[in-house]
Length: 232
Image 1 (cartoon, one colour):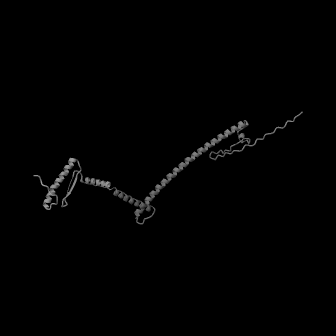
Image 2 (cartoon, rainbow, N blue to C red):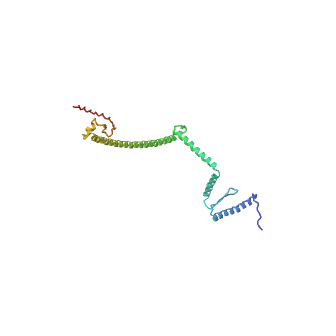
Image 3 (tube, rainbow, N blue to C red):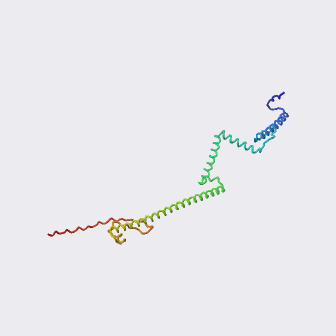
């Protein structure tokens, strides 16, 4: 005959309850061991008797199994309840903002009444470190600007020299034109002669500003030939 069904309820008799606990506990531990071996699973089993006596089984470290369970549980809760996670992150960010605001006020010399000597010295050291960093950055920017201005000044000086050379070439060409227009004369005399239509006044100093002046041509005088008398 088959075994009859057992009513699942609390056993009132203390001795029978203890015997049943011992048998079923051993059976449960055996099933847990078989499950770990057959299925290559990580199994952790903890049992507390009615007398608060613990019994446990694990095929690996029970501590690692508990840590893995807690981590998986937290991740599962975060997926199921993203709103609570956002509230938690918002609370953390709010706390960080309050700390930053407090540090800012202390840097500005406010809310220093509750600080000790050690805290004040630490705050002073942080301020000095910040000032050193600011000075280094300022000197670097000024140095870069000075180098850029020096480079631009060198370019302007080079352009000035090139312009001076071009003006000299123009002057020499003017002298040649005067020679062709008024005959072969001394170059310096032609350049300074008043009959020359235009002349250039040039400073010979390389670093001095160059001044070009044009003088208007003087009017040419034409003599009217005398009338020839008719002799009869």
